[in-house]
Each structure stands twice: as structure tokens, then as C-alpha cells.
Length: 56
Image 1 (spheres, one colour):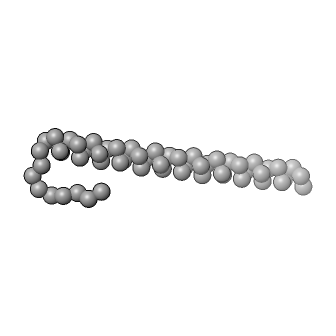
Image 2 (tube, one colour):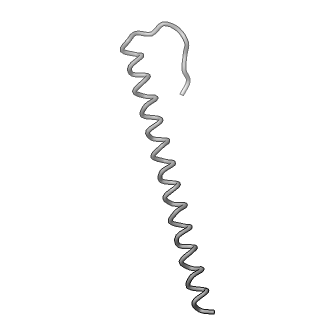
Image 3 (cartoon, helix red, strand yellow):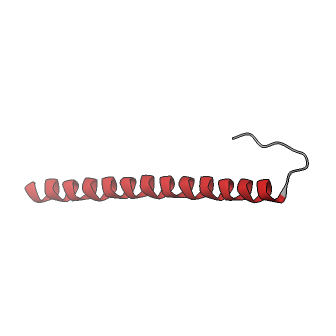
């Protein structure tokens, strides 16, 4: 998204703020999803290592 400088109406100002808030929320949700995926992978990796240790 490109941001422009200059005079804007209050309606446009609040629309821009809402759009920025939505973009931040989307980015945070994406990061949460990536973190959960990473945590799940780490847990599964740890479980597989435990299974390998038990086999030995």
C-alpha cells in the first residue's frame, strides 16, 4: 500500500487508519499461524526423537 501526504478529509483519515489496523491484524494473524506451525513441527520432531530413543 502506498501512502500519500497532503490534506485529507476526516472520513478518508479514519478509513486509512482502519485499513492500517486491518493490515496489522492480518500480519499478526499470519505470524501467529507461522509460530503455531513451527511449534507443531518442533513438538512432532521432539516426539519422533523420543520414539527413536525408545527404539534404541
